[in-house]
Amino acid sequence: MITQNEYKLRRDKLLQNMSQKSVSVVFSNSYKTRSNDTQYQYRQNSNFYYLSGFKEDKSILMFIKVDSESKTILFVEKKDKVSELWNGERLGKKEAKKLFLIDEVYENSEFEDFFKKYISDAKELYYDFNLDDSQLRVLKKYAKNITTYKNIALSINKMRLIKSDAEIELIRKAIEITQEAHHKVIELNKLDKNEYQIQAEIEYAFKNNGAYSDAYTSIVAGGNSANTLHYINNNKALVDGELILIDAGCEYEYYASDITRTIPVNQRFSQAQKELYEMVLSVQLQIIDMIKPKIKRTKLQKKSEELLCKGMIDLGILKGNYKELIKEKKHKQYYPHGIGHWMGIDVHDECPYKDENGDDILLEEGMVLTIEPGIYCNANDKTIPKKYRGIGIRIEDDILVTKSGCENLSRGIAKTIQEIESIS
Image 1 (cartoon, rainbow, N blue to C red):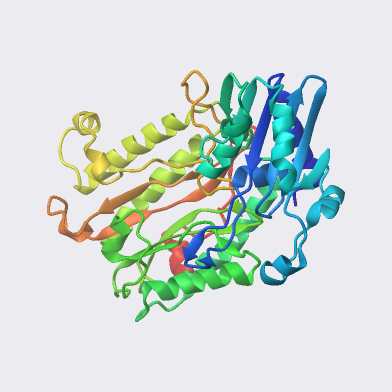
Image 2: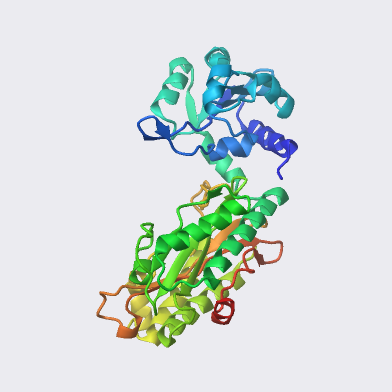
């Protein structure tokens, strides 16, 4: 687990990197209305959580670097018996002060007075440029002397690129739970089942093992539905002889996993399915082997496209000269997405891919990213061999960059045809 000392070190680093005569503000998330007076399950703002580990709404972090003062203040919702009767117990400022290694703690009703006091002597204001209008109005109301506004989210997201040992362990735990979910579905008799029943099995495995939430809405796409990249309807009957693309990962203590496996409904791959699957798997393994410090992510992307394009030519999906097909991006019709993305507190971590000069950020030890090549052969595409039509395949793993190479954190999840069929 992440200790309060680690959260403090993050806050100290952020404060240290701020300019003199500056104030930074980070707000917690608000509840989102689902319907009338009902709300979606609450999840804390990722950057706020990264700096505090505090899960309550109506909270604010303020970083002050003005004249001789350099400190952090946490504002929390006050304790109120009536409110807590309906919405649950609050930590309150006294307990928050005991729990968090933070300079000062006050009730959120005091925020405006403190902000007004410190912002009057500041020249720079750091805040998340995606704040909602009500939060932004409060800041702009008192920021009369501010000459420079900076997006604090950019600084925090850059910090989030390198995962600590504690963060990596949480990701490992999330993947461990996700492994059980995927293996349960692989071994399940899927004939005469619906996509939503597979989703239910996955979500049960998540919650039953301590992951109270999925990291994103699970994709359970049978047959041609796999060729819709963000398919989340999950409401069609599974068909004997088809494949199911399952993109599902849980969130454990705010840290994500993101795994895709493509498996047969009837427990056995057909010859055509094997041909496509082995091609995609070969590409994925070659890209993972390339990962090490100082490598550009765009190099991985370029290589994945080259390998998939050659594979499609070999299978007769693409026809023509390789160099011309690459130049004209003909392969993008069947592989339209990126090779992967950063992963951490968010399944798609909002960490930067380029530095301040617009150059690619090189991979470093401690970064975590997904590798997920795919091929999508729509059933209505009459230009490709008939045996491949209606098949969509993606294979995705979570990769940790190490000192000399990488570690596939999700290597325990069945992936080869032999492994998948042996579990079935």
